[in-house]
Structure formats: structure tokens, C-alpha cells
Image (tube, rainbow, N blue to C red; front, top):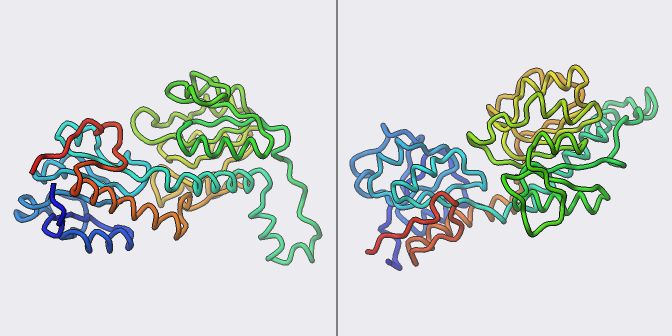
Length: 326
């Protein structure tokens, strides 16, 4: 492996966090294109690009357009926008940025849950608009965390961090995952529908992809019940947004708090209009501290790969990929 990476070409398609770009540019030969489209790949890029640093979709065609490609360093713990399965078949490593954003996202999830249940943003607006003076105290909220039963869809690192916080709030926790997590003692439900039937507060931390597409559907929401609260801090694609809007409008569930949406930044008007929603613009990990830590991990994965042949945080689909001997 080489210790001097200045001749290694790293491609940045579209936008990249400024701190990540600065570090990549300082350690490698960085080149940019407007977006991850094969038509932007020049002959020079095809012959020289060995790594990608990205916070955008990377599909099979773009991977195939770069025959020298060895690694895709994805900015974000979620990597459903990267065709990791195809990358693995082509011998291309894919990394993501787990752990460094876990606590921040878990904090946001609990804040969003509190906002949804206790209507805190609306109470603040009541004060700021002068209604406390004009109309008196903000109306009592019909919902509370007291007596609730929480379910987590996706018991990974972030799910576990959310579970710890829910326990501190005095809520019992259950979960649904692809399989039981042996290291935790929370009640396990083998189906999402079964989990929804057992709880009244459902928090989705599930990753995107075909396996979870619209998993939170009309039946799941109906099972959650008329006192149900749904919070999504994972991926918007995991929710049938039309079914959710209908459930909120007709009283199938009580309220929803959403940080992610299926077609960002476009939010369905029915969700915007719903008085029983608390909506955030995908800010789960959006602090300077956490985003810089994620940016460092993007760069550190590239440095480690081209320095020692080992990635720091490989995704499961490419864990088998070995660095080429040089």
C-alpha cells in the first residue's frame, strides 16, 4: 500500500460537506463533477479515479463508468442511495459513517417525540404571537408521555440509543428488527404489525431500501390505534405517506412527528396541513459537531483504505472486498 496518497484521484460528485472536501483535497488529488452521472466522466477520470467521496446517490452505471474505482466513502450512516450490492460484486468497497451521529440522532428523536406529544412548537408560537396575553394559557395537551408504551422499528445503534433514553423517561420499550438482538432484553416482536399492536408509540429508525419500502402502512397505523403516535427519524421511504396523512386526518392515529420524507425536500401538502403533525427538515444529525465528525470519518476511511488497505466502517454488502495489492 502507498503512504503518499497525493497521486490518488478521489472523485466528488455534486456537493460534499466542506470539512470533508477540505480533508480529501489535502490528502489526495480531488476532482469534482456536477453530479453522479456517467456522462460527466471523462477519459482521464475513467483511467485515474480510485475513490469516491459522496453524499449523493451512486448507482451501478456510475460505478461501471469508473473501472479503476476501489472505494466509495459515503457521508451518512444510511447508504441506501448507493448501490452497495453492485459495488460488492465489482470488488468496490463502500463505507458509511455510523456511531459518530448516533447520540445526536437519538437526541433529536426524543425531542421530536416530545414536540409531537406535548405540542411544544405550537405552544411557543402561542407565546410569540401574543396569544398568551390576549387569549390566556395555551390549551392543555390531550397527549402525554405518561403511561405510554414505546416500540422501536430498527434496533441498531441509533435504536438502542433511543431505547436508553425512553427508559430514562420511564417508558417500557419493545422492538421489531429483521432478527432478535440477543444483547438486549427488550420485548421482541417478529413482525412490525405485531409491534404496532403491542404499543401506542412507534418510532421508526429503519433504513431505506426495497425491504422496508412503505413498511409503515395503513394496517400498521390502524394497529397503532387512535391514541397512537408515530415518529420517523430513519428514512421517509419506509412510510406510506398517503396512508399516514389519511390516518392523521380520520383519527386512526393521534399524531405524528417526522424528520424525514420520501421525496425530500418536498413534503406532501396533506402532512403540512395536518394540525397533529410536528415536522422537521431532516435535521437528525445536523449539528456542526456531528457533521464534522461524519466528514472526518469519510476522509479517514479513504486514508485508511489507501494507506493500510483496511476500511474503518465497511457496510455489510462489501465487507468481503479486499484491497488490491499495489
